Length: 354
Image (cartoon, rainbow, N blue to C red; front, side):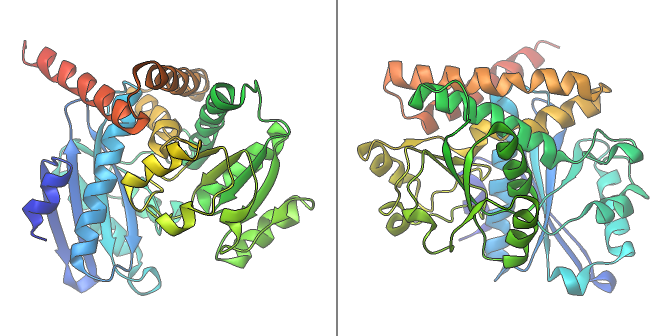
């Protein structure tokens, strides 16, 4: 697929390439939109099979960052920084400082936040060269690690989904599966434990399971290939994007499918199969915007008490979308996209008045 064909899939506006051979630094930067404000560019370091796959991933990440911000009516656009290579082979202080110099060239239109393969230590190296960083720890001038507020926001969203589908006012006692317990999944598990949920978790990396198991002795563990058959109220995917295949869906024994993953379905058309099986599908981008709320407040100079209050917007927004989807008969995915696009177009029209 050509680069422009990739961009047309999500109507993305800009795709940039940056390389510094001496540092083994190869970066693809996607800017989906800056209509609402500067773009949040999630930085992901991954060993892609080829550049075509990396381009597609960058554009998808940028698109969903735009969508998440627009649904919550936040003054933030969507972007992505995809770094190509094996983390253990390319990471260095100078590697990330060079990335900071690139950020400066965008003049504040692009802010970097972390994602898979990039750590807070790496972010601190970028910070040595650039101020355009979001989600730094409080000791370094930020509002804390973004995965904490992303998980807190998901708890709000899950409560809205549970109220709508299960007529439950809380998550206490609900059987919840968490697939993938990396940075986000582990934070979500800890908060679900505090909510009193009955948890089953899985991950391909046993060390991650061991960390959680050491904290919570009675948590249930299931093998990755058996997790879809686990009977539960909510199946929450926090693993890789587009991981759940049609075959896996046919094994699901849940009432609700959602997660921290923006789009867990490998084939979006499978949403119809879920509907036929009376499984409510709530794409992750509807409930996982807690980090967006944190980062917009960070840019605007507010503190964590405002973030905590505004996380309730995820509950209200999720419940409103679910109710409107039922009333109109519009598939939730389509409705959410329409709402986001409507808001962006409205802001764009207002800015033309200047």
